[in-house]
Structure formats: structure tokens, C-alpha cells
Image 1 (cartoon, rainbow, N blue to C red):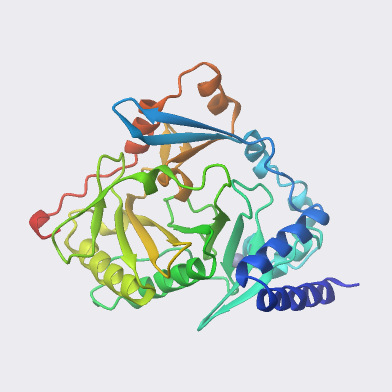
Image 2: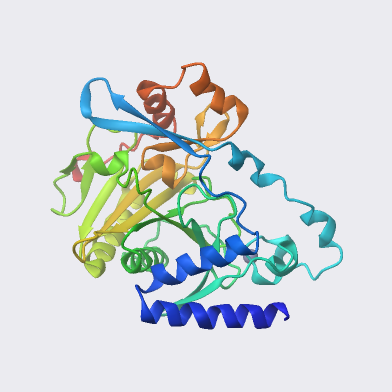
Amino acid sequence: MNYETKWANLNKKLRQSAEDNYGLASALFELENHQRETGFIKDDLKKIKRIVFQDPNNKSYSLRAQINPKRAKRHDGSGILALAGEHPNINNGCFLCRENIKWQQEERQIGFEINLGISDYIAFMNPFPLLPNHVVIASTAHRTQELRLFQNDEQNQDLALVLTDLCELADRLPNHVGFYNGVGAGASIPDHFHFQFFQRAPDLPKFPLEERRFSDIGCDFTTTLVEDYPLCVFRWMGELGEVVEKATSWITNFARTSKFETQQLTANFIASRSMTSKTVTLYFVPRHRFKQFWNGNAGIVGGLEILGEIVLASNEECNLVRYDIMNFEFIEQGLSRISAPFTTDKADEL
Ligand SMILES: [Zn+2]
């Protein structure tokens, strides 16, 4: 059976599963099973260990580390470049373009097509997952991950679209967490727009960031800021449309009034939905695109690290645990390295 037929058949089956069972989550679990059977997913997560470090000053707070040595192998590329000469290669061999994926992954990788109102996406399983059901949800079209937060227009269409799509996907996946990593803020493929989603770990469903208190910053009664966290994280909670609208106008205004060089401003967005109600939670982390690492010039801080879980993959990183260097303060300091000063001229307005 050729690749196009296999793709079409699997998509038909998954669409059916989404209708019969628990929506998008069912389809993504079936996709995962399929991709495990074809041998595309190379890690079963069994080797991953998680260590929770309690805050010595406050027992209800924690930060944690994930020991995941297999992640270090993800850049091996397994002979992909050798194949490039023999195949139609579009957009410099972009790893998220469907035309390239076909030959790069030797026809083993198949994606699930998702339509969200006006945007089209394809969900691909991550071959080296960080958590269960780790998917990359990439736009069908090859377009940049770059997002300009600063716009003169209060409506900020580009930002509103990204937040709408992220929150809508989160809304359809109540036991998952999803994020957008901006360019210079953990995006591994900056040329092709994508989100990442994963299911909450069954043993540790809540993330350290989610345990924290958030307080009103006194501007519009809906925007809150995390307390006592190494990073500056803003949060909105509520009904989807309302969250997107409030966040879009607040972030646009933030970008405009920030003293920060707007060219250097990038961001992470994280979204999830409550298991028990229709409430959506959205986090925004303003970032400086030249401050990316928690460990000197290694260890990129992306959505998972912002949630309070850093990933240790290389030998050097794993040694931090082996030699007892890693603890709560170590992670706290590491994360605070990427936190940029966000004082504004009009700080009082924030
Ligand atoms: Zn692409």
C-alpha cells in the first residue's frame, strides 16, 4: 500500500474514533499506538525518572527534574541527510513539511489532520517524548513560528489567532497541556509554525507552576501574576473567548509599553483546560530571545521547564543529579537566568 493511501486510511479511522469516543484525545492515542507499531516512536517513557525537589522554605512548593537520557539522541538524524539528495526536498528539508516527512521518516510517520475553523494543522507524534502522548501540532502550510507581540493595532490579529488555536486545542484535550514556544524561547523548528501538547503524567498530574499562587496585578481584574516563582508568568482563567480577548489586548499593550527592545521580545504560551469545568487557563511568559538556557550555554528553557520541570538529557546534565548538585535552589537559579527585567516606564499601569 502506498504512503498516500496509508495516510488517508489512518486519518479516516482516527476521525471515526474521535466521533465515537472521547474526541480528539481518542484520535491522538490511536495515532500514538499506530506510530509505536511502525517503530517511529523510539521511547516508551519507562526509562524516564522524575525527581521532585521541595522548597526548603515552603513545603507546598516544588520544582522538579526529568532524567531523560534518550532525548540526547534526538539530533542523530539517523541517515536523513544521506537520503536528501534522492528526494524532492522543500523548504530546506524542513522536518514539519509533510512532503519531506514522507522520505525523511521512510514512510513510517503519519500525521492526523485537524481542522480548527480557519486553520489547518497536522498532529505528529514526537519520536522522543517528554511525557505521554507527546504530539507536535504543526500548521499544514510552511509558515514561520515568529510572532510579533508588538503591534500598533489593539486587535493584534496574529496574536489573537495563535492564542485562539492554542486554547481551542487545549479545550478539546482536557487531560493534556499545550504550549507555543517562540523563536529564541525553546522553539526547535523556528521556520515552521507548531504547538506541542502532551498528556499529564499519571503519577504527577500537576506541575509546580500550577501549585503556585497568582495575584491580581490591579489592572483589569482578570490578569494575574505568579508569586514567588523564578520566572515572570502571567495568567488568565475563564471561558475560552474571554481569555483570548483579555490576553490579546493585555499582551499587546504590555509589548507596547515595555522598555524592552521589541525586536528581542519573544514568548511562551501555555494552555490547559480544567477536567471538571469548561474553564481554560492560559499562561504568558515574556522572554528575551538571547536568554535561552538554564545551565550556562545549554539546557533550553521551553514550555515544560516553565511549568517547573527541567529536562536532563546529556551526560553532563544527568551528572548534576548523580553528584548531588541538583536541588531546589539550583533549578530556581537556573530558571531565573532567563527571566528578563520587565520594568516599564509605566510600571504602575501593569
Ligand atoms: Zn515546513
